[in-house]
Image (tube, rainbow, N blue to C red; front, side, top):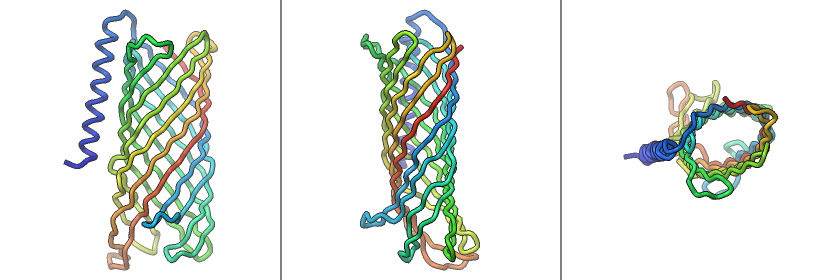
Length: 279
């Protein structure tokens, strides 16, 4: 059985256990469900690097991307379920080289869509901060278009993968203010990249290596009315993608060489300003 299938099954089972445990615990208390939604504007510092087999850096892309974030969740006492979506887009600086090693300074157009769903359960520890564990998964679709420079043609790449994730949250509320700290692990599942060379060569899809990553976040919110709050969140996320195997490169169906995608590292951080509404 492929490792990605096993991990997907493990995450699904963990999410189900979190939900069942929370429902059992929540069933021992009184109270109805609470529905909450939020929408926010974000600013993310994007950094992406590629490395060769000797771990020498081939490409570095970095810059700030504006974006939008949204979430919808439901909470029943100790258990909660949340769906989050985000979209970031913009141009960043490209510092790289051609396949023959000629340095290139250009820019890339980035468009990133991400969605996730997580189940969380508050642990009955009796501590001042509420402690919750969560498990779930997500999907990422990322368009990376490298601009042409002079006689050097650019290319368009489309990445997509699923991910499994789990982590812990600490939450503390005082009067109208609330704070939350989060730390979690994630695993990319079945990552792929489709490379479009334009008229030069035929497009090719490459399977990338699954790797571990992690993320952390800290947030603060202030309740401005019984059902409305304003929030501020800072986050950092880190993950890698493994090198693909070497595949045949073709032009109009005729073999023209070989192609592979180097291993890469992504390090993103940013801030989100949001409004929250509860029912």
